Each structure stands twice: as C-alpha cells, then as structure tokens.
Amino acid sequence: MNANSPIGIFDSGYGGLTVMKEIVKQLPQYDYIYLGDNARAPYGPRSFETVYRYTLQCVQWFFKQDCPLVILACNTASAKALRTIQQNDLPKMDTGKRVLGVIRPTTEVIGNYSSSKQVGILATSGTVTSQSYPIEIEKFFPGIEVYQQACPMLVPLIENNEHHTKGADFFVKKYIHDLLAKSPMIDTILLACTHYPLLMDKIKEYSPADMTILSQGEIVAASLVDYLQRHPEMEQRISKKGLQRFYTTDSTEDFDNHAALFYGTGVSSKHVDLEAQ
Ligand code: DGL
Image 1 (cartoon, rainbow, N blue to C red):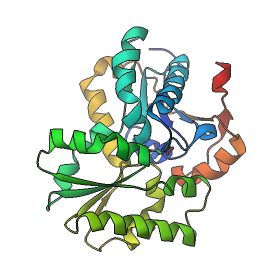
Image 2: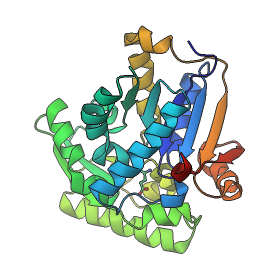
Image 3: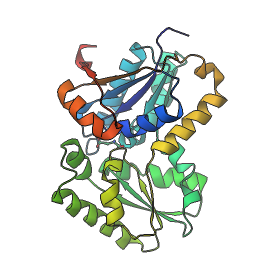
Image 4: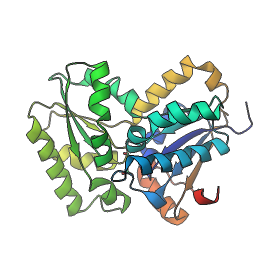
C-alpha cells in the first residue's frame, strides 16, 4: 500500500459531496480525495462524447493522485461515461485500478422499496436520455415500471445557491406534478442526481405524504462497504489515515463557501487545472 492512496470521489460539481458524506460516515478509516469539475458543470445537458471526455480526464487525474479506486458520484457521468471507461479505457491502462458508479448500486435495491411496483426517477436530462435506469432496473427487478422525469433546472438552481427560492419551489412542484401525471401509482421516487438531496424538503412538500423518497448517499455507501469486503485486494491498497482532501476545477473560495451546504461541515479546497495535466 502507498503512504497516500485515497479513494477518489468525483462529481461534475458539488452533488457528489452528498454521497461522500455518507461514505465517510460508514467508512471513516479511509483517505479520500474529492474532485468537483465545477468549471464545466452542469454535465446534465452535455453530449455523451463531452461527458465521456471530461469524466475520463478527471479519472486520469485521480489515477495520477494514486487513487486505486474512483467512485463517479454523479449519475450523469455514471450513465454516459462509466461503461466506456470500464470496458475500453481501464483495460488499456492495465493498472488494476477500478472506477465504480452510482447507478448500479441504486438499481440493485430500488425494487425493494416499492409496493405498487411503479417507481419514479427524477434526474438530469442526460441521465434520462441515456435510459440507464429503466435498463438497469429491468435487470434486477423485471416487471417494475419505471417513469422518468428530466429536471433540467434543478442542478443550475442548486449550483447557483438559488435552491431556497420561490423559483426552486416552482420547478420542484412542476417536475413532481409532471412525473406523477405519468402514473398516479408511483409510490417511490428516486433522486437520481446527487445534487437533489439539497431539495429534499421541497420534494417532500410537493409529493404525496406517503411517497417514499430515496436519495443515493446511504445506498452507495452501503454498496461500497460490501464491495470492499468482497475485494480485499483493493481494500488493502487504500490508505487509512482518515484524511479528506477537496479539489475543484473552479474557484476555491466559491467551492468552500458552497460545499458546507452539501457536506455538512466546512471544507478547504485546492484548485486543479485539468488542462495543465
Ligand atoms: N450530480 C450530478 C448527477 O448526479 C449532476 C449532473 C450535472 O452536472 O448536471 O447527475
């Protein structure tokens, strides 16, 4: 094991911090590096090719920081880039390093939460267009009906710290209404974007009282616990000093001011210039 070989956690912006918070809660012994590609967020409306190119660049940066394992704590990157990175890029690199996403762990359990067997997905346009959720859920829970609603305004509202405003109320209400119009039998809504837990109060407010609303942090953290138990060769490669470091491709001041909202405690980030790699 290297003296410093942390788990890498990636998101286009701040959203992955909601996942990292839960991972650190369940696995505090490991070292972590977070990278938010804030300069290029949001990824949601971008093409497959662009999301893949940006995500691969970030994964290569993590590998240069000696991360043996990288979690794409971003549904858009998991939907549009993960498979190609796993199947085409990692074998060429031949490092034994691994990249995991957030969609698989979520789709493995989501069917257990729904009695009506009708689930709703709130996600970015990119995640919805990729069809990753319906395809993956069908593998683990055949017969479950999946209804998706793209919510293109939510990430920009959150990234710009406007998620407490009336504007956010308007869009949350509209998106929940549009989702439930597709099927009133939906009893479980998945927040399939790691930014959306910041809107949990408003999402609850505009959903029926008995709706189960799932965010991914705890699910992904539990799945990582299980993965590391099943892969001791990977577990042994991760350094264990309980350190957490934060990097952003944009302003560190903005990142530090904003990150506490997602992470719960203050952070002190460093700037990274991916073009200069
Ligand atoms: N947190 C990312 C996700 O889970 C947001 C994507 C974006 O940048 O639009 O999809």
